[in-house]
Amino acid sequence: MGKRAQIWILGFVGLVLVQAALSLSLRAGFGLTVFSDVVQCLALLCGVLFFAPISYKSHGRARIFWAFMALGLVFWLAYQIIWTHYEVVLRLDVPDPFVGDVVLFLHLVPMMAALALQPHAEQDQWSTKLGALDFALLLTWWLYLYLFAVIPWQYVYTDAPQYDHNFNLIYLAEKIFFLAGLAVLWRRSSGYWRLIYAHLLGAGAVYALSSYIANWAIARKTYYSGSLFDVPLLVSMAWMGATGALAGSLPLKQKARTNGETHGVWVTRLGMIALCTLPLFAAVCAFDNHLPSSVRTFRLVATLSTMLVMGVMVFFKQHLLDRELLGLLRTSQESFENLKRLQTQLVQSEKLASLGQLVGGAAHELNNPLAAMLGYADLLASTSLDEEQRSLAEKIGQQVRRTRTLVSDLLSFAKQVPTEKTPVDLNTLVQTAVKLSRPQLTARNINVDSDLDANLPPVLGDSNQLLQVCLHIVNNALHAMAESGGSLRITTQPDGNRVTVEFADNGPGTPEPDRVFDPFYTTRPVGGGAGLGLSACYGIIQEHKGRIMCHNRPEGGLSVHIELPAVVQVKTNGRQQRSPEEDEERASAALTLPPTP
Image: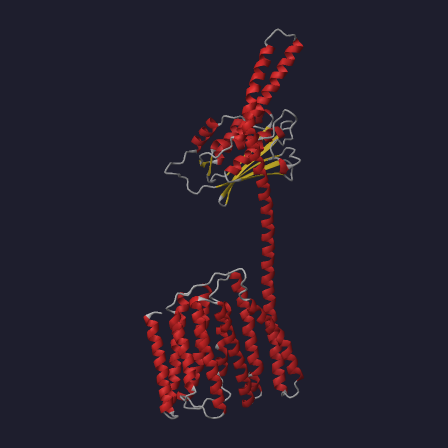
């Protein structure tokens, strides 16, 4: 507790002691009335001046909590000012019924709203929004209760004794409800928040008891302003102000929410219970033959109007819940689809890893006997053989060379390891791949249409590997359209923090687009390829933290879609970015292996 807070608390204690001394030593009179009323106004004003700055310095729901508490004290202060105006300025007794009673009744409603916010515990924004609607339901219900029980006897059919009885009863119920909420929060909280709730509970309990005693004294004509009955009332007001002074000097922190906590559920249940009580009130009013007809009509109209207002609130809340439910359903579906894609990628990665380990060890062992077989086949073909024998020897050599090419592809596939990455211009790599494949494309009457974004950001990668990917995909499209020709459209564009490249041809497509990245899967005839090209592409793109997808186009043909993370900074480790021409020259020079179908 800070020194300033201690001084203020001592000041409040001194004020209460002075009031008690004057109440004991002085008789009823105008001077005692003035002192008592003004002191109570000052105590409440101090409470407002303490609570409001705390709201300004706080954040989130804590700010709204202290603002509501300050608003409650403002209502309380307004009631006390109206009371003082009658007794001090007008020098009149406060009338009965009193027009300021509704302000006194309403001062606890913002405080109950503050309790519903539960600022001591963390809550998400969605829970806070629903909690505001639940509070609106309770606020409407309390206003309805005042309209139903008190207002008819004040304005519709004036009856002071009935008015006083109903007001005291409903105000007592409101105070009990407020104290029960404080007790629940005190039990659930910890640390400094628990201390603040304890002080608020103590001040509220003293006020509830003192107001009940004061009403008892008023009914027996023994109460006057400044009497001993006002001392506990001033204690409750001063205690509220002291709580504000104490809270301003404490570091109030929110408690982390645990899985087992259900903050705000009781507020929702109370709101539903309040809504369900309206038909009961209407039934009681309709069948009570002792009520004046004007009172009965007023109550029925107030009940039906409140049912309509609260029904609209419940409908709006259900609308929000439906939207949230649909949003959660869409999120769940997207998560499920992402999980399926992740599972597919994981299986594919496991296949590639297992295959790489297998071929990495086997390919080297196969090279030695293949070299011997090829040497013996060439040696045999160079000897004196007839044409049939020479043809068979040459066929043996061709098959050995084909097997050695397959082994070379396997070694190339198995050696996909992380390499040093630099910013790379994908537009340059695409143009290079098209230039390198131009003779084959022209010979097969295949037209290439490029739509490359001029503002495409670079990607961080190995230009040699990414160029191999582009060549593999262009080569696959070339083979797919080799018989009848066609067109290949290549598109690049930025997509948020990623860069996309799409290769779309108008060939026959593929019967199983989900399997094109599986090792050894191919739709070409025997001898047309080993089926490792797109598998190698998949591994390269995965190693670059990107995605590669394949699907048949609705208008015909195959589309290969590649996504890679974009680079924000074009300089790495102080080195300047290379020009596109340098990237093209480096990529072309570094390409040592032919594209594998």
